[in-house]
Image (tube, rainbow, N blue to C red):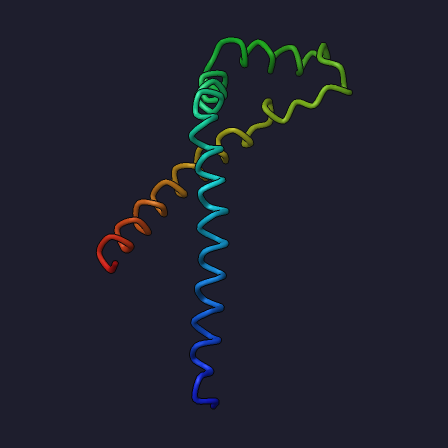
Length: 101
């Protein structure tokens, strides 16, 4: 091992983490900026309107060409579960960051 190889390794860690933190900030900016849209989607999931849309889809009234993933059995529920789990993961990671800074 080169006497200064650790500097190269630390430089890589610094650069990688700097890049990933910047990307995470961009993602968090998006999530924060679109919270109202997410809440609207969740409200739609539990709404009478979605129930009517499901009934209309079952009757074949919604054109086949219309994308309707929001009417699938699991798509919105999966997103809610993923969001919840990511929130917990962010809390755990934040706790570790503050504890070990």
